[in-house]
Image (cartoon, rainbow, N blue to C red; front, side, top):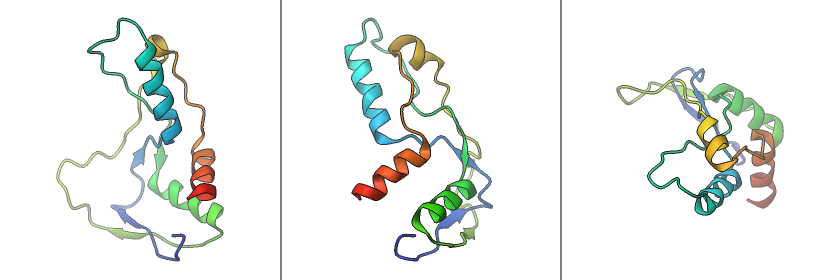
Length: 114
């Protein structure tokens, strides 16, 4: 989008994802490395919030100063997951993890340093 190219979105863009900034993932990994008695545990990391791909495109347009419309394409895989959100209860309980970055803050850092 930065180069003026329309984003390609599978389906209609209403599907959601839990988009977490990499610094929050690093934070969770460091907390896990220091934690006691969690060997073998599976712990979700994310923001706990769903963002639709259409919302993501809107945010990127706003932050980049563009007005690009998504190019919607047929979903090319079977059993596609339409909604995804991390359940952070276990991460909070076992690690004390809570995300520090909002979606906009993470994107802003990427745009400033990328």
